[in-house]
Length: 113
Image (cartoon, rainbow, N blue to C red; front, side):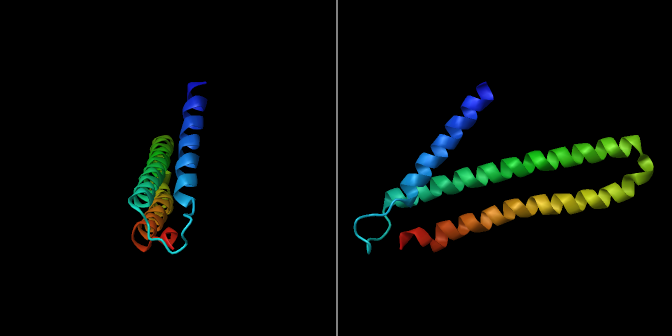
């Protein structure tokens, strides 16, 4: 029950921040305010934290599974190592994609109009 409540509060927080960050101002030609930049930075921090946390959990599970499989069948250690490196590279690419998107939001700022 506790996990559900924490997850619901986290989702609600992200939705509230996202709604405020995406809201348009009355003046279409206005530059971004300090509040807009702060909300973008908060969204970037939350997004990067979630991506890195998820990737870390995935990498830990992959390494643990490979260690267990190698311990059970040491003859497959070499093949499992190659598959492990491929899987870790694909998992890490998710964090890199998130970093690229966050850098675009911070520096190109498509929301500023």
